[in-house]
Structure formats: C-alpha cells, structure tokens
Amino acid sequence: MDTFCPRCGIPATPAGHEDARAIYRCENCNRVWMTHLGAATTGTVPAPAGRVLVVDDSDQLVRLVAMWLEDEHYLVTTATTGARALASVRAATPDVVLLDLILPQPDGFSLCPQFACVPRPPLVIVMTALSDPVRLRQLDGLGVFDVLQKPLSQEMVLESVSRARSLQRDDQRAVI
Image 1 (cartoon, one colour):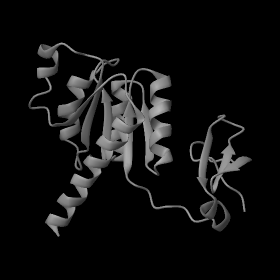
Image 2 (cartoon, helix red, strand yellow; image 1 turned 135 degrees about the horizontal axis):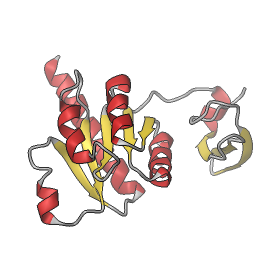
Image 3 (spheres, one colour; image 1 turned 90 degrees about the horizontal axis):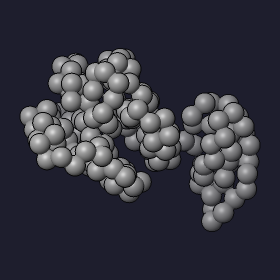
C-alpha cells in the first residue's frame, strides 16, 4: 500500500522506522514525517482536526508552522500576502487563521475586520514580533482569539490552535 505526501500528494519513500512509527520522505518537496506503524500498514488516516490558514510573509515560517499543524492532522493552507490570505479565507473557509500583522497589503490589522465579515468567520490567532504596547492595543476590538509572540514554539502554536478548535466545537454543540 502506497503512502502519499500530505503536502504535495505524490507517493512517499519509506525512510526507516522508530518506536512504532514509520518515517517517510517525499522526493518532490523533501518533507520528512512520521506516522504510527498501524496507520501505515492499515491505510487508515485520522479525520482532519480542522482547517487552518497560516499567513506570514516569511516562506520559511509558513512552511514550518504548516508542517507542525499537518503532523497533528490539520488541513493547512498558506498565504504570504494579505490579498492571498483574504482570498483563501473566502475560498477555503478555515476554522482558524494564524496571522502575522506585518504583511504586504493589506496588513494583518486590516484583515481582521474583513475576516469577520465572511459567512463563516475563522478564529484569528495573531503571530507577531511586535512588542510595542500601543501597536498591540490596536488589536482590541478586532476579534482576535489569541496573540503569540515570536519566536514561536511548536507547543505554543499547537496549544493555541487546539484551544481555538475546542471553543468552536463547544459553540457548535451549544447551537444544536
């Protein structure tokens, strides 16, 4: 049974195993990831944990955060400009947006109110290196769920996204 790269969809090359996990490598994008050996042999794939859009003007940071989230079974889309982020929110309807504030126009400050106007608004988690309290106070009233200070850690990103998704699931249960 073939295993496919979660990022580009081509067949992956087995690269070893460790502690009941199979390691795979994608020849196309050079991504290396692990999966539980049971999933690799049975072909079972966990249900997606949610849809997340990662927006930052740094390609490297976008790829890193996307990889962290994909490894936790989130469906991830990415954008490196404000215009692409807005188009992605309208087209892909993510549950959560991880958003940098300093972007090619429109910037993150301008995007937050626009995200709130889509039919199914995502929860916004800001990723920023800004430390100026005056600039950060501009986020008040923009509907931001959480603010993560850069440099980011895998744990802080996953914990914040998990809390956002948990809140959304609780809200959906309350409506039913």
